[in-house]
Length: 373
Image (cartoon, rainbow, N blue to C red; front, side, top):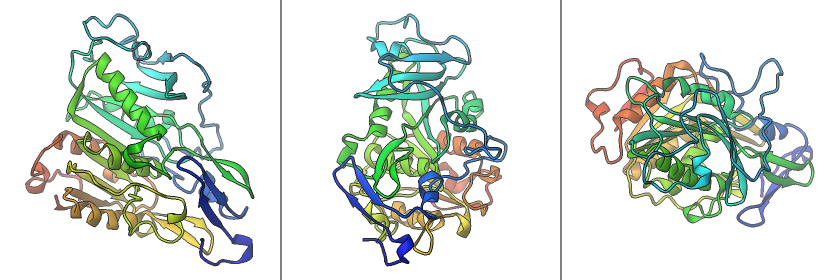
């Protein structure tokens, strides 16, 4: 049950099964949670914000019901043809190319995503490329969030393949407000991620990219902002044995009991955290003002509290942690930039052992605490 609040704000929630969450929500400030409550802005200062400030349309218009994969090559022709090798390539994988890919069917769910490749990537699976999965915030778009990292795929620290998924408007049912959607399937999670459409997309794209261009399995990384950060943390909880290192702006582990109180526990159900691989994580938050009012006078979600709690949670499970407080609230500012995240990924491959940042932390990250590495 939700805590007692004025009648106009009374709310409660019930999980009907592992795929359907039914929320009883008021029509008042709760709408902030539905449309903006887990994102608001993921603008990295020099990049575009996820939510348009001028009211412009930010959503993608690609068809979600196509049965084939269609690709819009925005960078040049580096895929879609002969693989040039002996690797057997799934036809859906063979259709992928640089730029926007739509109509990618994963277990009956049609997905869209952006794919960005380093200049030297060669079709045929003969390479060994790091790969970064990047998840946008609630109300954002892959087209905007892609800009955080796409220009750095040939960066000085690490050349890599970038996957920026688009959300599916995952449906929830709220009788008082009708059908509502959240961007990511991240609330009710089964052990091993069974049936989760984001985990299935990760698995399918990792396979496809490996078949087409080759993946460096020592450098598989995930990042995200707000609800996208929470999605990255969820993925880490069920695919953490594969992940080399993780970085999140304003995320949160919902299998950390200290994060999931009376209210959140009614809708967030994750399996216990049982990851043997001690992947390092960069936890980036905006200080005490990094929060979202979910239900006025009843529940405020504090990403500041999540970060502090998750630093202890992960450290207690043997994971090295860099904790960064940029102090700018619920946003992703340039003081902890995408370049810093990529440098962290480059320095922390799978099984890195003692972090090289412990003795020699990089410059320009004075807002970060390296004492938990």
